[in-house]
Image (cartoon, rainbow, N blue to C red; front, side, top):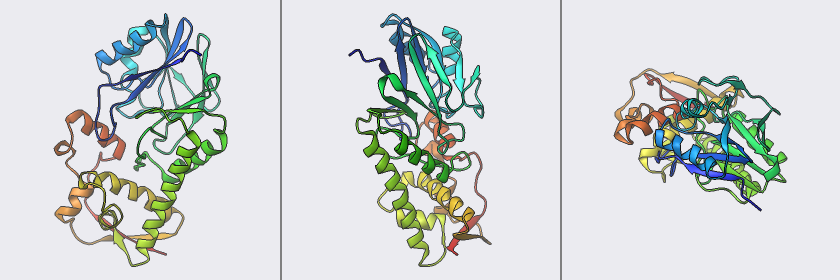
Amino acid sequence: MVNRVVRVLAPNPSPMTLEGTNSYVILGGSEAIAIDPGPADPAHIDAIVAAAARHGAKIAAIAVTHGHPDHAPGAAPLHARTGAPVYAHALARFPHDVTSAEGDLIVAGNAALRVIEAPGHAREHLIFAFDDDASIFTGDVVVGRGTIVIAPPGGDMRDYQETLERLRRECANVRVIYGGHGAPIDAPLAKIDEYIAHRISRERELLELLTGGERTIPEIVESIYWDVPKALWPAAARQVFAYLIALERERRVWVRTLDRVLTSSEAAILNPDLSAIVDPESAAVARAELGFERTVDTIDSYGLR
């Protein structure tokens, strides 16, 4: 059986992107679909076009899972190079030609991707099902190694958990998950179960900690993520924030703003200097992924209701 999925690894490795962003070329005879062209890197665009050409195909459609800067910016130059339309969610803020919604098909030659709306990591996140191949392309919903950061304001923890539960219900016949980063996943249901259990476990840890009294987000991070490198604590803080937003919305925790300025250690977690951790391009990805567009001037404390 000919493998109709070709992975083209983008040259953007970082702590947020693992070895780099996975772009995919789905072969459909003389035409092909490109998924997540990644950064606007000319050499990477060349590599995507060349991957299709090696199989006698041209890029005839460009499908983007979501708008984060390690997935979407390459769509515009790939469109300019090939003339292929760009497909994306209605909420996508990057240029696209066709709005894609639940159940739509993206077709090129004899290849068709079915659109699944998958909010949580980002409001506009889509997953693409390649039913002929019994595979799904999950972007940043499920990746080949590690777990996903769900960071407000674009990320929503309950939406993400609902997306995982839906995948668990509907992916019984899926044989492989192609994530936005990392290697393909050959045991899809086991990976999804792992992700679901991880979210439940982290939330349980948070609630157990709050039984001992109110805590700030940096205090929660230091207690729960003590075994994680401190360089990753700002990401952990955004993760904790996503849980707390959900729990406050459900009236399971309360929040109050403390009348004091942030300490230096609190500021390092809540307002990190990402340029001191990663290169400028990776810092831009991290800011978008983690929602660090604005600095935090006050600090809140959370407790159980």
